[in-house]
Image 1 (cartoon, rainbow, N blue to C red):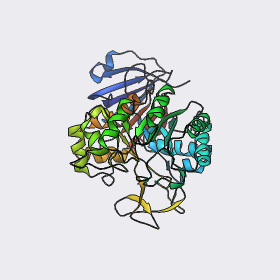
Image 2: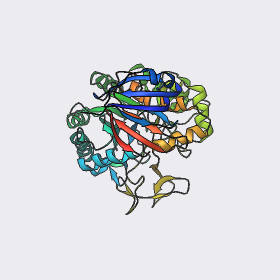
Image 3: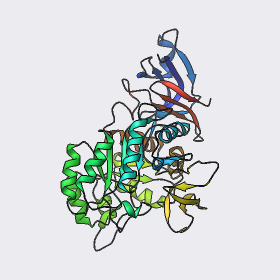
Image 4: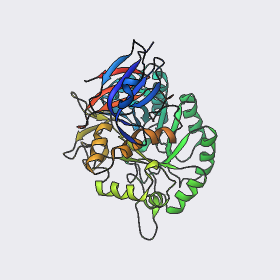
Length: 393
């Protein structure tokens, strides 16, 4: 049974608001029982077995949710091994992540199936962050916008492939990246909606009209916005322009300052509702890896001076980020974004967009998935289902 815990002297970020001088009461069922002002703390009667944790003014927020990560610490989805996914879970928790979607690369179908099965097998065996399901990046993407995906895996819409991935996913596939301009994409989108899978437009060479057609059949989210998609043009807004213009379109953003310039992120925040932006890392297997060769999806990588992983053979090819979410939060704060908005983008929004139940906000009745971090953006504590699994006080 979990321990009843009271976190006191906290700056609580509920997911929508920042409230200073607060406390959070976690019941022994692993759920949040109350959030209260410290002025009322002495007036409240708590059970005698309650553990007291003093946050010393630190931020207490909903646990971070990384919905797009390929790997971390030398372990990745491309390993096709459940133990690698479990190790990802443990390492992500060190950086404040309480839940995540391991993300499968576009690869040959057998490799994609193996990675998908590994993720499903690891669910329920986590040593840290919860595995919420499977994110599949492709394989129905544009050959003109492959990026760091494997060209060997790129396909036109193929329902036989789709159903094989579904079978491997055992109803645990949460989302899939697709190129809306591909033939038969409307059919696929309608099928995915029936299957409860969120489609994201990404690795796409779509025109403005293609994106609008995709929205009409339920493609309302986008993968690592601005990257690996057709760029804004004054004669056709293309994918980038359509996503900026349409307020109802959700989008991922990699806030490392490299994949997207900080001033462009500020522009995005002016043009799009905060509620429709999701911060992700797109982190790779060598992220935070301390020893050994840096390999990302079979490609030897180097960490550029700017901080992104690039191909050793072709340094002009971005492979992905070396980001963790607490670093992304620090970056956004340094660019003048209010902390309550940042946490909304890193916890609340992904929970709503992907229909995750009872996480993403700090409200009574929700699971006590909580990240505590100080004003210097150091992780101080991590709760998952009310259990304090990381304690750096």
